Image (tube, rainbow, N blue to C red):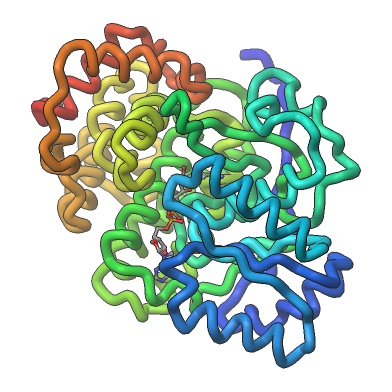
Length: 389
Ligand code: NAD
């Protein structure tokens, strides 16, 4: 193995229940005087947002609010957000919410000062160097779900509606300057979102751990993240007010994103086109594909998964781990097939071929431990339709 690699580590995270009260202090530490608070329309109506805005009011912080953020945000959301950012003379962003609001908030701070279209900064080769890095406004991230880990990531995901593709925009300065990870903000998550986001954290840790390449730090983070998910996701799902389980899930989510700098794999390569074409929840889509991809990759990852299972206290080596994934999915009511997940799913051969074509060119495909050919993508897609493992 070639022991040459590049390691990047996340940012300052103020972790703990109640730490949202430190928001004014965090604004001062990042030099933001007129923040734009970016969230989504569902959250905007909830007490978590009202109580957070009250913290800003009490500290006399002049702020604006932008909440036109679709789940799976689109370019129109970004364009509208930039108009509000500029017209309000904002000098930084508080991105508050799940991955959708975090990504869009981060992208507003990034794109408001750029002259090229956002698609020119896709995570391809060194395209990020095209950006005017001095024009990127500082970002504070406050996650309210525990899944994407976008709060500690250097990317934002946005759907290109013209091509029906999800694009990953990358720049090192998309990494938030400071994160407030306050698990108390996540207690109101509905159970479907708790399950889907938690499985997203698991998918990130698992695919990172299985990706080829030399990154022992990412591997170490990933295995502990996986253990935390198996121990805590069922608890957070059963009792949303379990703050200890919520806290461990918030850690696992950040750990997944810290780990997946090593790479992702076919779970994501298939879930991205499905998300772009059917507007499904990202984490839940990953959860549907997980056991099929695990079985497909077996020959390349069996020894690794045996070590992982032993660390997590799961008996039975690879088979035991695969069974634990299935049982976790069942416990969380994750649909076993795409048909059970997407209403009126009717995929003809042309549509399947389109999805397979999109999967093999997805930037995550290269991280799959077994080469993801078009035939392999079709096989995985068909398995997820028939339920055959
Ligand atoms: P989300 O942000 O789309 O939120 C889902 C729903 O949960 C929304 O309706 C929201 O209002 C609600 N919600 C969020 N927090 C809540 C709370 N505390 N209480 C009640 N309701 C709450 O979901 P998500 O899974 O966190 O994010 C998905 C997005 O993140 C997708 O666009 C995906 O592509 C992206 N993503 C980004 C990265 C990255 O590295 N940047 C990684 C994975 C996924």
